[in-house]
Amino acid sequence: MPEPVSRILEVQTSGSRFVNLKPEAGMDTYLTVNEVALLLQLSVQTIRRYTMNKEIPFHKVNRAVRYKESEIVSWFEKRKAEKTKDENGLFNGAKDEGKDD
Image (spheres, rainbow, N blue to C red):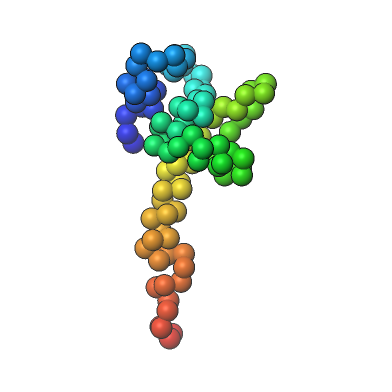
């Protein structure tokens, strides 16, 4: 797995107004839409669309939308694995075409 997300975000956002992303031991880290967009290298608009369509895991904290870091990393890895399998033809039946058993 790549270096911890909080370290990546710390480097990418140094000098900005982002909240301290280093959680205390045993606590989950919650990210904003901007932080998730930086992490996944997607646009903020794309993350918002995924949220609106409930395609990405998120939590409502009062009226704010937040993303649990561990859930985002798992979701992204799962999505990447599914895309790889689909590109290899494992889900579209391409391996079985033209074969008679």
